[in-house]
Image 1 (cartoon, rainbow, N blue to C red):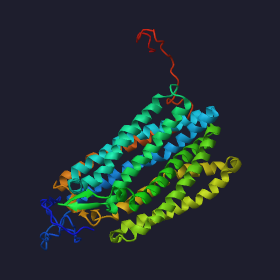
Image 2 (image 1 turned 120 degrees about the horizontal axis):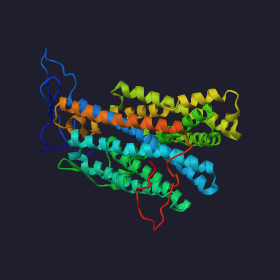
Image 3 (image 1 turned 90 degrees about the vertical axis):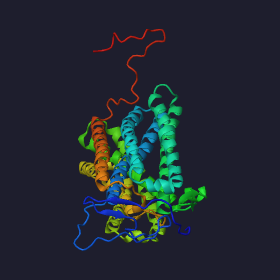
Image 4 (image 1 turned 30 degrees about the vertical axis):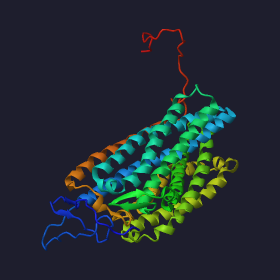
Length: 449
């Protein structure tokens, strides 16, 4: 760890809802960026602040990141399922695989589009309320996020556009390869985000010069165990979430006998296999992180951390152990011949939200456990936040969280409606009703009314 230095940055100040000042040094931990400079303590009988600007900013980030993570879970989890079915379609040319690709692909696209907007809201609040993080660690923290932006907003989106508009235009193997590239760029984008987040948790590969962090060892930054091990855990969580979406929707259709039994039986099998792989990764990489989480003294300061971590570990074990009987029931379609299979279908539909709840618990344990640091051992959260008043931050919180919550509700409603409609006539990949000849004049006179 570099030796503490004195920064020329102006001391942080702010106000609470009652107008009480927030001074630098509210946390006792020393920081190499901002040495401890205790402010005046409230006198006996003075009003107790309801909430500080720092707490409001932390709450805003927690809510925005939590909502955005729900989109990420579906995108990264459902992508491999769509790719698997498209590969099967390319190999077998069976209609059931084509319709499965188009059905699950529609759900993927809706969630992806709304998730992009949610991600923009998440990045917006860094500039609004955490300017200290950008001033001190912007070069280190911002570099992987810039890579993520290039990958997600340019490369991944371009490939996805080729896939969407390439139906009936591209060779089936090229079209399939394009979507596998979409999946791979999605996970590359997730790795870039984990590199940035891993630096906050375990800062390595940098040095401080004049109060600003500079990258000195890119390999150490990228191979940070807080990034690599967390990526494996996140991939497992995403595969679990995507698998539960596929299993839950498939079980709902099979229970109601909507007429697509073969498609949803194949989908349920695929979901069980993908979910089993996800459970193995989530549990294995989850426990591997204890090697550095145990050394973090801040992790035990909040009872929320222990509760969230305990629930996540318990739930992870349940899902991991439950994968074995589910895999056994997939042998020769045993599940689909059980006399009480409708009760099993109802149960599989009801537990669809479980991996999403566990993922949020895991995120709470990771992020709250880092407090009061925004960069552990380097920069405190109170020193990184803006000088806006608590009222201003709360207004921002209400607006941005309201927007992302609205996006989440719209996403869930659209996914539920598309799931209920089933694969009878998916819009994605549908052939054109009328293909205009090259010499045919372009007119709108004959458009159907």
